[in-house]
Amino acid sequence: LQEQSQLPVIDSAQFFEAVRDLDVQVRASGGQTVLLMTWERPDSVSYGVTTANLAKAYNAVGEELGIKVAPAGLAFARSLQERPDLQLTSQDGHPTVYGTYLAACVLYGTIFEKSPVGNPFANKSIPATTRDFLQQVAADTLGY
Image (cartoon, rainbow, N blue to C red):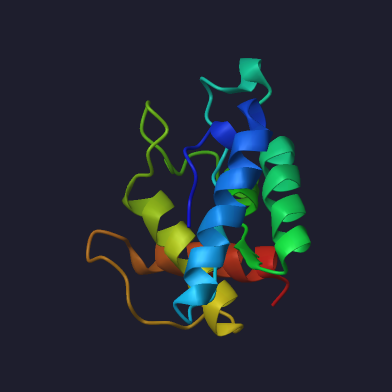
């Protein structure tokens, strides 16, 4: 599950309530909830929607409910520190092909509990060196 990118910080009560309700439905159907932590958007920082605040909200509800959190937002921040030239989002905050791939690597590592490093799959528009970098960022963020 992924919430609208700003809501976990702007209205955490609504975010927590929605996750609780959806988790009940997921479990009732025999599934397991995984939350995809969103990332900091330049247009949201003035509202307090930062990587740290998003991580705090997602991790808090994940801990409360005992559900996995795929820390894509933390991976985006790590990637931008190491490779600020790599465009992970468009102007409106939606992910580019690189950001989408990074989020997918984080989800893979979270769901399967193994490193995404060495996975040969990538969109053909992603150079192998960039693919390898994004896989390593995801693995490092997840502690692999």
